[in-house]
Image 1 (tube, rainbow over the protein chains, first blue to last red):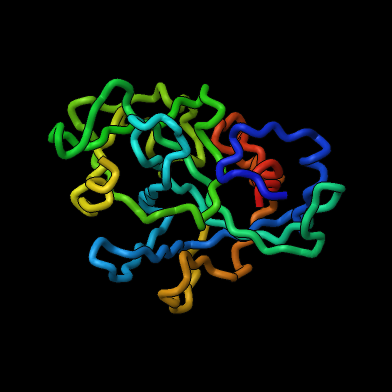
Image 2 (tube, rainbow over the protein chains, first blue to last red; image 1 turned 45 degrees about the vertical axis):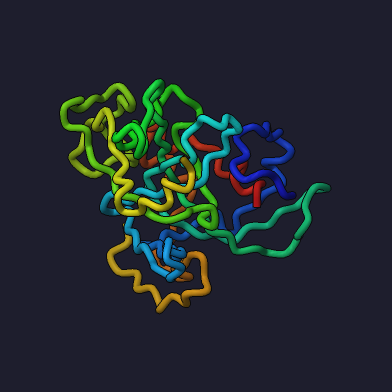
Length: 197
Length: 52
């Protein structure tokens, strides 16, 4: 069954969910995600990311609005692979398949905030609140463009409003809140942003 | 979770590379119960797999 890349617009029935079996009910965690990409000067480069430290990635935005920011950003909480069986009438491949997936916490762009070279401002993002059903999810690693460098907006401080739980898999041990906003350091890859503006 | 998980060299033709190792298995049910009341673990894993 092939669906568009993020699937958040698709409602899966219980029948769809019951058609997927995870072999042995186990998924397998990995420490490292390596992503190869092509630089602006047509060279191959690589980002090596480890979810145990802050591991942030960028993907192409799925938004149709031409004024929307071209990228979405996510913090990778875990890197996994699993063996699954897809059964039922809508299955395309009924053999055991190895799949890879990232467990992520999504960021959102700050509303009514224009960024870019013309504005002389870095993009500003913040975690989606836990009330948003899309705050946490899974991401196909083949959709990751590369890692990204995020810098806290110190003047906006920290908050526990996005995620109230004090014990959570979404934060580092000892952290009980989040930075309200982050800047995306687009000077790591200026041409990527210039092409989209 | 993963103290040692060496990753073999990555060919530049690959888009991404994740270890094949099964040294760090996670039982999906006990994993969810490890963090009760945590919104981060209340994600539909089976719905995600249906996109592949």
